[in-house]
Image 1 (tube, rainbow, N blue to C red):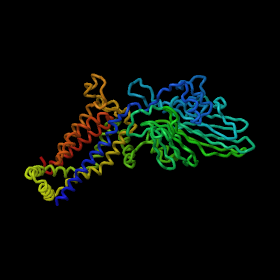
Image 2: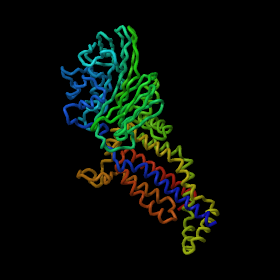
Image 3: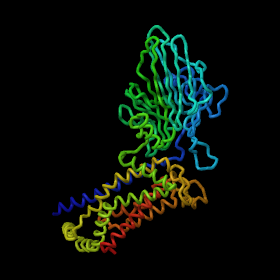
Image 4: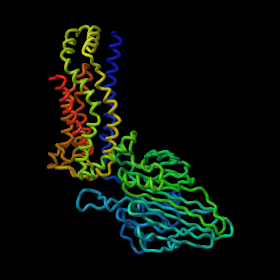
Length: 560
């Protein structure tokens, strides 16, 4: 009997500690590595060339890449071999010489909430795409002015048609864009020789990034679906060895928290994909097609797409279905519980569209989740209420047999049997809810609609921490403070609700467990101080709903 009691108490202790560790692990990463407000981090280039000559060769650049020595801006000069491109969502320029995008800003997203804030710049001289044809026995275009352009700009109504022709080959390149973030490049190659021509296409995304940037729980770096499998590599992961894979179809590119630049391959074609570190802070994601043979007077067609823009789940789903892009929705980091996170995100966005306020959508979302989990939570709270009801009897036993541990364990087990209470039954329902907690946390982390979405009062952006820090007198004394002291009103409210909720639960009989639980509200208050305000508001409101439900159940079972 004693051994069973020891084993039971050990299992109970382990279960409780496991729950605490899971919750701490879920939130501690963002506390130690707080996310920055700026999602796209590009560093200034110290040399006049974006890439030194040796690196340019590694990047499979043509001689015309030297045109990139001049800084690229959205205001193009007459010397630039670039064509302006614009639709309702993006504005930028297409580089004729290198067949890629050398500038792109997002027309509907601002860097900050300030009225005069500039638009988010996704692609520039430190972050661009390139496409080029290579051949072992034909002269391919290498200089920008060898291409002839049909128009002076690129819009959804006016595609850009580029032509190149010499004694070996003729290339007709058509670049078109839709009303959103998809740019399609279709090349038609005709062999003008009397012998076969062997060609292959290379495409790449080149980026300079400060990889000392703080990390976050949302994946940022290389991503793609190759051979039907999701591949994710952080910048540090490819620092030494790189990533190389042969794939048939798929897609790949570079992703940030809210934005991404993705190359979408011909789904029937074999290509070699690589993610590599070039030099210093330069990285490259690239592909090269298998060699293609073009017979004399034969014409082949090659189509490649580029997605450059915001990670809008509705748009991404639409592209996945209409263009047949395999698992394109995985470009959004839904985490381990994809089957929960994706529908949760869709439902939250629907509530936002219905209510017009993301903060209200989060409150309604939390309420509906709490209602859905009502049977599980009720079972847990009933068990804890019964434990609290006969807690005086437990304390009396502890006092009576404080010098006889073996007898105390036997009497405690008998008490549990007489009261028909399983002390672990209060924890087990929480295990069922853990996947839901993870999924909800991920939803609020990746939701594009939460970015710069205002709530009421002083919360002007739900995606950044509550700015009303008590250590700066709620913003009236804006002196610098360590990030862990960033305690706004909402994190403090969360800590208070967590403390109240803890007081409603029966205190652990084990002193070490009691000591750990006593400090949990304080620890979580400091941790959540650096979390997005939307996450803290959700957590606080969820605690309030739990307190109301728990007090009702305690009254129902007769607990004072």
